[in-house]
Length: 488
Image 1 (spheres, rainbow, N blue to C red):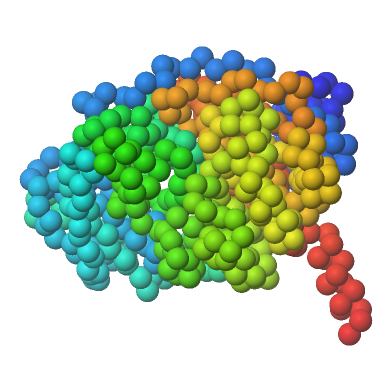
Image 2: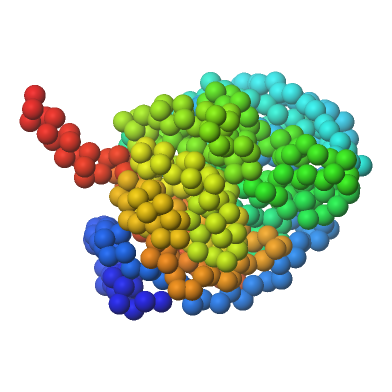
């Protein structure tokens, strides 16, 4: 911790403001403080903070399968492992997925605007698969489209006494000033720490979950238990994922390349269970895709699929970035698994090749923020790039660059990455080896509030926060618009 850093002083002032003021007056003053914090930090290039907090973690072991968090609903062939994701490019559709254990059963979704009154139906598909000596249940996937924006829908799946009821809220219309709250989770797994992260995330009121890869950690098992732990994880996250759309991206633990089991097709379990609306963005693979949601354009990349020049992912991203319309969706967010900038000993420089290929694009198109996982700790950078220096270990301040945030701290059984490199590099603003999750609350076209929330022995503790200023609608854009008006 560097006590001379302007960020340290402003964080202390923020605490005093919380004590002295309240309501709208508090919000105005905090906005000024946080704006000063961000601008001062970028210009000063101070090394930021390394938190001295020591996590008194619960054991990093998976919750036993007989625990109630994995309980399957009672009744013959009852639907379970229910989860939803966005089903189209612009947020007027959802894909609903669920599993039935004994037989295919009904693949119909009944839905409507009132609880218990379902005026509409949609028909899905059903399939199952084997993975070594494991046979999955019957996996249903149903696209529900033609929905209205900013509307709460109730839906029912299953039949008879074992039917189950849920709801979801559609996002607001695509508009530069549409507000929306995202939660960001990575490397979750299914430990007691994972459960704490999930429960804390559900308390934030986030409307959409951005997931940056490494879901179940089922690949740490072998033989039949791999599939079993995919099932348990699906039931584990249902408490959130059946109601809030999760936008998925993949990590290394989804690859599951097991020649000794005769399983050599990467991402096989993941692809059967977690659909994405990839075709809506003209992607050739479910592993990379884009959606627009409220005022955000969200791009999910695959760190473990080919991405060098002229590969399908490279070609797709080149075209997708050209399609981004910052007049309609000013917030440009990228999801990936391996972090491009990371000052932890764990996975240091692992994403160097992706940085070389894509960093110039991220800066050219003024990406606002890039969320990654992989490193089991939290870290936030300043706006920096290596374009000028061409040295990853010594990037320079770049106002066109994204903020890089690593949230691989969901709570999985591999434990925390608690060995940060010393000294803390100048590009690193804040880092802490704890479990937690983040929220990004977009308020309008110019400002969003960001928080990282630590899991502290069962409590959710807001720990790192700042105001994120939009790259497109910033001061430069306003000056350009003013000049345009005068020139008419």
